[in-house]
Image 1 (spheres, rainbow, N blue to C red):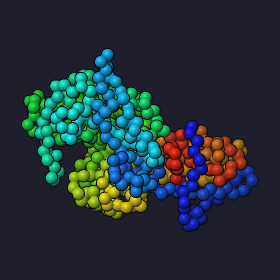
Image 2: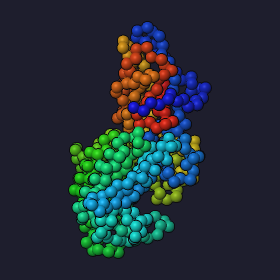
Image 3: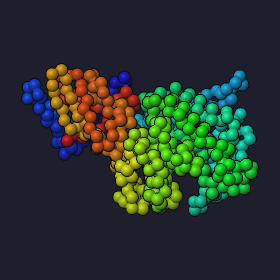
Length: 443
């Protein structure tokens, strides 16, 4: 376990008055704990900026996560002796730079991208054969029609490669201490489970010019989707991962009817939060995954449908009467990609919005009994705790952790210290990066 110094952020005189006095069952002595506050959101929570954001330095303390897209071809290439070669340099560089700022990374690999053009490839060369093309009209004001290349999902080597790729990735980055915070998995445009079939025309092949024909040709078949997601679930044991909420569309998602009880343990991400029709469209897909919402890693991205959506995303009632805080509670959101928000919100406002996402911990009680100290902690935030964190007095930590603690639930952690020094109390974790602190308040 990585050892972290007991770091205190500057707090106001008023906040320092928030003390917890708990009576010892042995001696009646009081045990005073001070709150731990941070300028930004808790680790692995909040508004996410793209690593390429030119204002990153200004907003560094307002975020805990950075995002980057990748193509599979950024890492994998054909091995002349058979199979594939993997070079993770680009991902390593992204994570190293994020870690240097005290941030974890969110990554997403794309197989299809309207920005890719007709020459570049998103996959190893051997998988970029028998591709299909179509014109794509995104339907956003001012967006130009593009010619898009789709990989051939009728090739059984393609889904096999995707499954193997994520297995390799999970072995490379086994937990969040590597800097990898979340993985977003998907297919189609931007790996967002978009096929936007009604916006496609002028197909190069007539065998994929209907929705029924698209599955298994320009988008993976249901069977291949389920197979891939199952393998990803087996690979990523510690790093949370999720798929697009659009996978709830039964026309082309992995499940034609209801979500099976034995479905892989994925979270959900929503790439168009708070747009005007969100309640009528996106929320319907969220409800498809209703049984899963409180369990997994959930995230999103503010809608780019209109400039208005971006400009008013952080308004108290959002751009269309629904606030970020309300949606975060409803959808158990740990993070939202909001790269465009640096044009509208100052660092303090971005940090404040980020704290409406993810977990928020409050110490409710500390009791000392023979042989140990019990600390009861409530999650007052919007989302489930996504990683292991422990109560510690000095070098002694609880055996149990807060991972999986849901919103509005409490959990008691026992630390095997009978005479604790309150000045040494901290919530710690082996996945924290240098400089990160787990904040908590005091009841």
